[in-house]
Image (tube, rainbow, N blue to C red; front, side, top):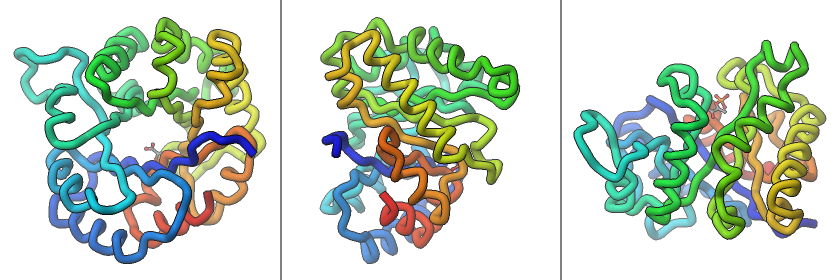
Length: 251
Ligand code: PEP
């Protein structure tokens, strides 16, 4: 058994207003099962403070879905690392495929975001994963390796304590199609070996690597039983308390 942290993280994307988020937390707190996993929830920016206040006495960590790479400035509509810290946030998701696809976030930009997050003592869940055409062309390993190298491989070894990787094949996000446990394990092992190649196996063995892409209560047990899958980043199925709880129970 490895000693890596098990993590179940909810990414709510642009769903749930303040009242809806509040209802979710009321039920979640009531029903939260005992677990050794860390439970993370990323609501929208407008719910962060309230969510943080509501859950602060409970084993649930509220995290952010994104942040800007600059410390401050004339960037209308953006949110800085320090702003997240000021409402109790300790961790941010960076590099989600929707940010890459719809908001043009490149590896270079993401490298800057990761650096800013770490400088501000924010931990990072860094998302990587291939599109369907890359898997079909059998370039998915190379792509994932590049995503890791370009954004993360100038970090210091000690920075890796603050990094969690989420492998999310784009073809499986919100599509109802999931990577098979074997496909996911194969890629997670590759990611760990790639990190080991750059930083040593002590570092790689300590990094939690989450799977994301249509995780549901029925497919979660087989995915989470794989040796290199340390939990999940969950979109759609994290919006309902009951399915989220069933996923937590599967880890
Ligand atoms: C996600 O948004 O990170 C995700 C994995 O979504 P879904 O679970 O809906 O595929």
